[in-house]
Image (cartoon, rainbow, N blue to C red):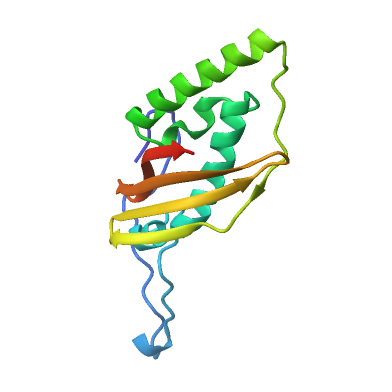
Length: 155
């Protein structure tokens, strides 16, 4: 048989049969590999790590050192709008005083988690800065096999 580009190929492509005398027990089968993680692997990720990272990012966003778009995939639309408002207000305050946006030096505390059900977690993370400490409370819900913040409050 000839293909459309002029290369000849065999008409019958068969499956190789095991040699005579070889039984099925000698054949080793391997599971199919996949680059996509299984649903269980994605769902079982530690929400505490996400809470700590989100808390750090929120402090950096409010300080003007990070763009809100960096965490857009991990927050709901309502949280995005809320943080956008807070970022605009903080930016106006910096411009009024002539301060520059700088990355804050912070130490992130251990997240305290409260699991409401298997798809909802509430957490608080204390963020320690040089002059003060802040508590960041958040609610995470599962959305399409990953955690997503549906509420974030910076105290």
